[in-house]
Length: 204
Ligand code: S3P
Image (cartoon, rainbow, N blue to C red; front, side, top):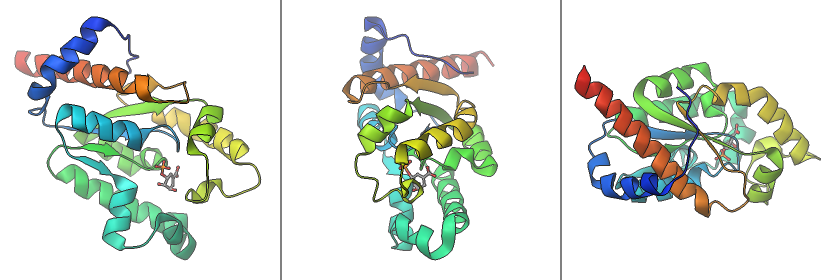
């Protein structure tokens, strides 16, 4: 199921009405997409809206290992980072429901993607590479963008990864540089999907 949001007033007010009810939703909501998509920024706002804890997988990796992401890449390479990332996400999804923002490559790892698909509601935050780069600004903390031409790297990552992100349960396009309008859209989209899944559960 891949849905695109149709923002309207009734969706927004329903979102507000149901935020209390959403606390009972038993699955985590996982945000996926390229660097700069707004996973952390929108994820923390969505968590506040839904009354859920928020976890950023990169922050959790840095907390647990006490090593910065760029140093993990430098010391052990990307494959070492991916192993830690997979373990971290699995541990988080084994715990109580949260809003989880994942690093851009996580959902492109088949094992991690299967786990997220099985245990969570996944949302792809999609935006064009030019917008992503404008949002990222300084690329120093993004080891994969270290190179002469970060835009070219982002375009190539988008080409490789978008088919994987498209397997998420929901898609939200966030084309503007600012993300303020996207919060309401994301909340409405997630709430509608939760309501739909709960009504399916009730009829089973
Ligand atoms: C990565 C994205 C980063 C971080 C790491 C690798 C990627 O997270 O996990 O640098 O493979 O796209 P953000 O998407 O939060 O920047």
